[in-house]
Length: 159
Image 1: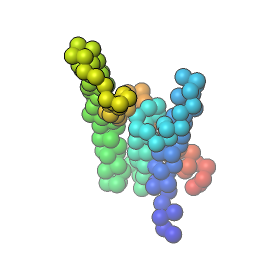
Image 2: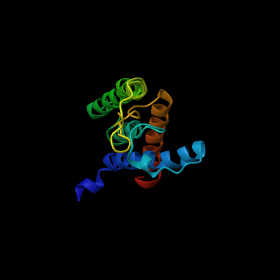
Image 3: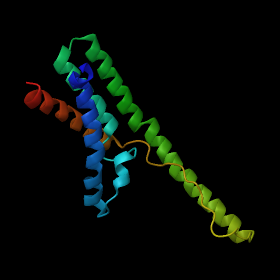
Image 4: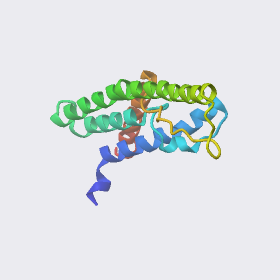
């Protein structure tokens, strides 16, 4: 099967899984809480998006060289993905934090000031997802992870 011989694709996929998995022990070391949901979550250290595009770009450099159009496309794609992860997606997560707090403040205000009775039990407020993007350090760690995965792959496995 040709797909299983596509080393750049396999390196990028491995980088995603590795970066997602390593979030769990990093989170545990920092908080002493084991959170398996991090395996499928966005955001956090390291960036799996950055790991994937860096592994892909590095693998393409090994395959076709730095002077190829394919490397150029992959490098520009990687820069856009990493810029997006630290820019737009990170800011959207920060806005979600503020909006969630505003919603809680409004609910508290309405409940306490107006004295509105609660329905049967507490109403659950659906919160916006706040962990969408990455800090620059998370993107950097993800890109280093991806580059190292491809270097190791081409040094020890493909060679």
